[in-house]
Length: 220
Ligand code: ADP
Image (cartoon, rainbow, N blue to C red; front, side, top):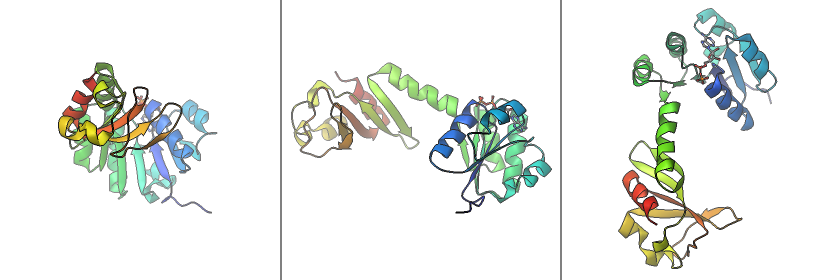
């Protein structure tokens, strides 16, 4: 199968964030054109990405020569150099690329990217800090919050819901959360049902409003 730029993703900036993102895409069998201005970084990534090239992404000619304007998806993974991030994002938008993701390192940076027309602005440091705060604070093993005040939490079950079917433990009415999945020791996750009986050694995933999932995970 011949690949086209439409199947592929261009990742600009192969620092810690861009590198990790690019490698994950390759792992999931997406073709990646990685661009960085640092020749050592490009050389180090050359064996791992579909293509890795050295170029200054603030130069329109350089991007056009690489065919970046033909891509549907692009990621600007430049954080520290604000000017480079903004100039690069602005070029990608002017190319008409439909899905541009860009990493922002501050609120002001994110606001400018949004004003330029970047469709997906992400704040990796900020978001990860919040997420880890939830893990540090309670007994959560993992935590994902969605923008509409809704969260999914992986946690150990509190004593109140053990050894009786979930339907009888009334977690939904009492705590405002729903147990969506359960993992027995040594097994994988399966969906929870009203008949599921949770044991102390199990791990569960609950869904609900952010505050409700926090309160639930603080129960002993
Ligand atoms: P991280 O915090 O994820 O490591 P950085 O902002 O430190 O992110 O790294 C960004 C990467 O982007 C660096 O590898 C840098 O060489 C590259 N970069 C910065 N400016 C440009 C540019 N104009 N063109 C291409 N690559 C760039």
